[in-house]
Image 1 (cartoon, rainbow, N blue to C red):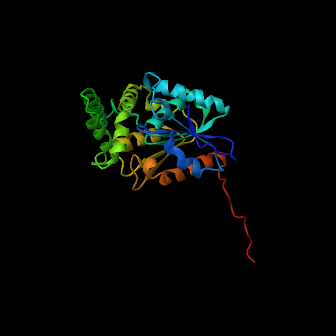
Image 2: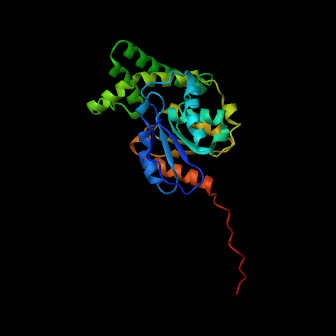
Image 3: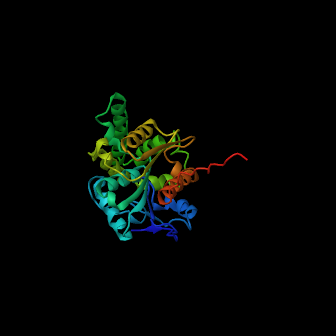
Length: 277
């Protein structure tokens, strides 16, 4: 399992960061650089990406979570777990399965689509929308026109025209990730934990969402934040779903603030009473 940019920490708990679909642990290199000297950062490749292009074959997010849990146990202490998109969904699963391994949780728009399937009409419409995108990707892959499917995925999360406006090399790299992305969709749809299950989480949780993100991402993030007693929701103006990749500085400062506060909480301070002269 590849880990990027391990730095010396001065606090007690390391940071483990999980990337989004169509990415790799390398997306967190700037986070590691910005936390240099404050926290150690281990940014691993999830199955199917980066150095681990061979998928582990496990069904459901639980199989990916178990893979990461093996990595976490090596630290012999709870970690600050950070996740973006699919990585945030894996982080949530880990927190539910092994809360003893998680000191804090930072989630940027977890793609827990299964929460919408039995919701209100708007939720169900959004769930159906994600199903359609997944189906388009699968049908295009089966027809041998993977670029058609990846265009639908990339443009949904990045904005219309993003796929065609990217370099040929990037389009080719995205298209090569189609099998892994399809598995990520399947894993997300197969989950069965509920919002009520999140009420059992007791670690401090920060949920981040972008004001310019698709409504489905904002909706799921808000549901998760509202369900966790120790959660805070931060809505970032001008940010979209892929901001942690394209403009990480806007997200990294929030991550640092959260985990630093968990390590060294700010005490309530009072000015001493001063008598009038």
